[in-house]
Length: 318
Length: 169
Image (cartoon, rainbow over all chains, first blue to last red):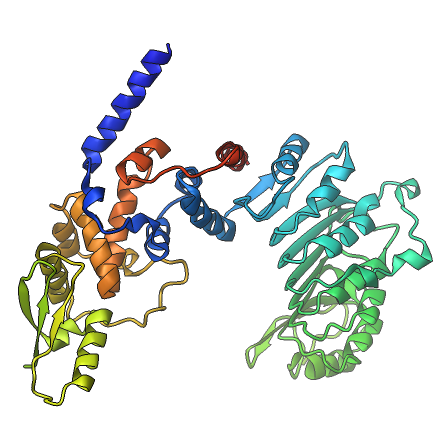
């Protein structure tokens, strides 16, 4: 059997020689396929499957193919067994793993520590993750502590089913200011995984601390998130350019808080405002913080995108 | 018309216009250096390319001749992902130009285009090489391009396992 396999192998190799020409490489002064510029150009036309294959050729090809894959491929994790295998593979070094963008979408978690271990992989740059409510504070802190290279984060938090699921966060540990900064995070989306239910525990200080740690955050989205007031109050939001509140409502109090943030200058504001909000206040807010003179259902002017949905019963804006 | 003599490693001289030669980054620099060091502004520059033989140099010049009226792109434009112009518009002429060449000539052309800094030619030849290696097994690539496996210990096996995870997810 082995002899047969060896014969087949040598036949395949000699066939490859015939196709490609046997010794043309010998006459070259150096191997062009070890020159970084040339490899980069050759690999630029390759698909993911080929690049994975090229990783096995030699160390320098491995390095080039890996960095190219890291910049443009992603993976979806649906099974806990896949997550376990990923953790085993990246146990010693996660720098050489060819994927840095993960969508971790696990419906059930038998052993939640696997998720938390994944959240401490330092090279991940983009992450979408579904987190059960009881793991929410712990997960945010793990991310804040370990994932310094993260640029884009989408957290889908599943609401609690009962009060028993709430983890008590004691007053002294609730503030997470000691967990370090997220220097590269530019976009953050916080989503309620089940819009029919509100969160019982808001963990709004945990959320605020997390947002505060992202000093260069440009885009912040809340989807069906029912606890915004304190988050707005606690976070400076200086660097923010885009704020979207989808599914929830922005109250007059929220607008006043945002209006008092002197450094805030939004280029995009998408929100549904509560019916209690006075039109004058909204106009003033848009003028001061979004750079638009008037509010309407859909308004864009001077390169600034504003979409404010007013309650149906209030008088239509002029 | 100002001319320049370009001499290959095996001594063949090609007389080409300076305008054409200057489309190669390397030749352009050489011509400018010659101008600065020469007292006689009318003197004809002579550039010796010691790494490129006549057959290959002729092909490079032939390609330059065909593309002499293409707009010159700044070095980094359209380079965000390493892809060059080949993607945008590889002409029928380019395809006919490359078609009869065996891979050995193509590899020499790549080295020449890289040395002479002729970006467009480098792009199309690299793309051709990619089309030759896509779908090949690791052993075939190693044998054909004389690349040696330099993995140590279980590095290759680890890479194989990582690849399998990536393919499955």
